[in-house]
Image 1 (spheres, rainbow, N blue to C red):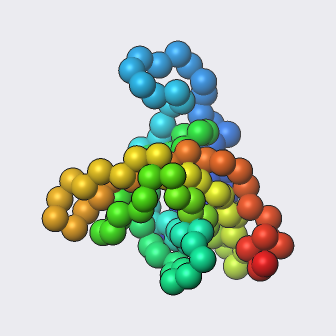
Image 2: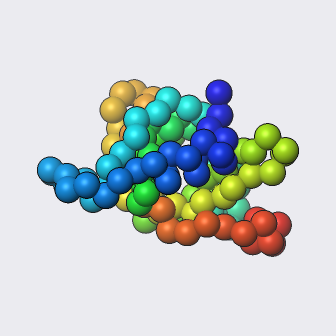
Amino acid sequence: MQLTAEQFNGIISSLRSDALAGRRGAPRVGLRLQVTVIPCAEQDVVEQTVWLRDLSISGMGFVHSQPFAEGSYLVARFHQDAGESIAVLVEVTRCKQVAATSYEIGTRIDRMVTRDELRG
């Protein structure tokens, strides 16, 4: 099951900015859904499916079989029922190998990406 744009917007709008303990800057919603990510690279750009683990107003965490370099950027696409999608530019802030072929990847949401930017 993939996270739809409506679900993304619903989750983000329902998050509250309550005071939190620890390093977290925003509350997170735990999820287990597939999301499409597109690395922002000059070559060998291939859409990949990752497992979204959590989502907040400032970032998202996911698990993937391959690492992404810290400081690199990805576009996360959230699909809508009508074939459209919402695209979000995220920066990889953490990538930790947790098993032989499993990486936990933390990202910070940079901004929404327009349809024109995706085409370009």
